[in-house]
Each structure stands twice: as C-alpha cells, then as structure tokens.
Length: 127
Image 1: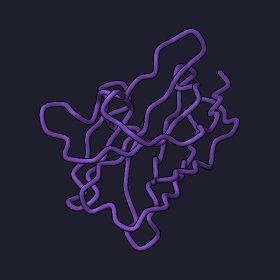
Image 2: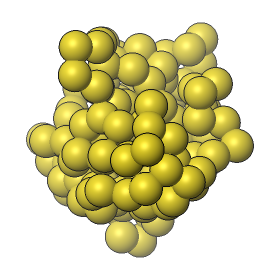
Image 3: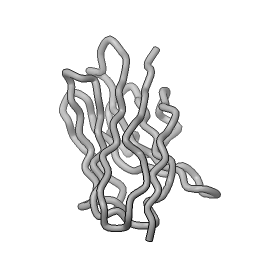
Image 4: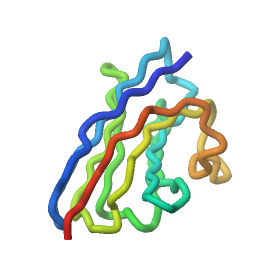
C-alpha cells in the first residue's frame, strides 16, 4: 500500500511561485513513476508533470513547460513540483499520484494508469 500526502498549496498572485510537496510512504519506489495532476472546477483532471523514480526522467504538459519543475528526493521519499510564473489558469486542486512502471508510450500522462493518489492540495492564483 502506498500513501501520498500533498502539501504546499495556497493563494498566490499571478507571476508568483509555489512549491508543492508529496510525501510518499512505501518500502521502495524503484519501479514507480510519480505524477502531478490538477483539476479545476468543472473540468477533467489533467496531467501536469511526471518523473521516473529511478532515472529521474521528467515529462511535462505543454501548458507548464518552462514554468514548472518536477523533482524527487529519494532519501526523503518526496516528490516536488516547483511552480513559477503562475497564471490564473493554473488555479486548481493539485494531486500527486504513483504508478508502477515506466513512462513509455505516454503512460505517465494518463491518470487511469495511476494506482495511488493523494488527497489533493488547492492552488489559487489571483489575477
């Protein structure tokens, strides 16, 4: 069983920054990929970023490339999402998720492939 706990959300002005954290409890994540998704009111959950635990390879949605950075700290079993140059359209509940396996063939951008989810953290960007 994998438990994920997000933190770091809040209210920020457009152009500002936030760093989200996802603390994971599991014996090993060596075969996992970790992802961040977000869901705005009335919209479907969408992919934001993903990282492979072992190799640290990263993947991003086009809408956040160059602004967001995903990283992981193996020693702390924690994944981060550094969000810079935030825009009003980034307002959403952000979820951390874990999936077994790699990110080949777009497997990390589809929420259906993730088995474990955190409770979510609200990010609100004021314009």
